[in-house]
Image 1: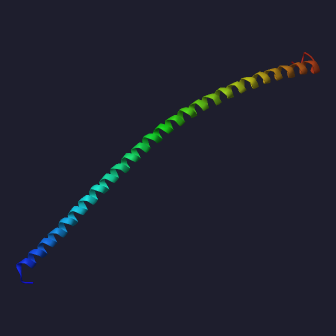
Image 2: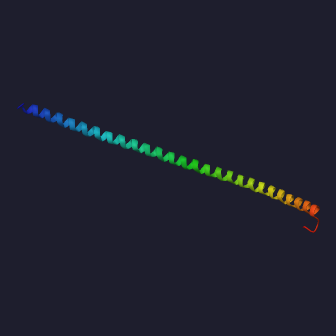
Image 3: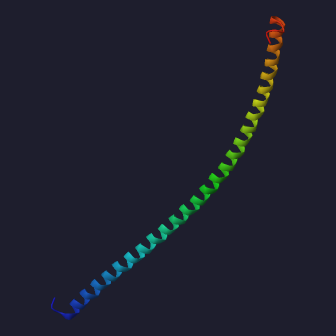
Length: 103
């Protein structure tokens, strides 16, 4: 153990070990950063896709709500017309039964 060659060999092996450890940790950090970057891009694309889908759903809902409103207006007009005719018919029956003085 007193030979300088032994100590030199130990030094070379130790420095090689530390160099390999530093290289592996650097490569590992780079791989992790690259994977985080790809995950970020995937999340970004999903976000834009969801925004697009939500926008199309909003436009579809607005169209459906518009059609429902027009249908409700049409039903309201029909019911108003029927109630008007019913009121007219009830007044006619009341005049017939009670005479013209009741009206």
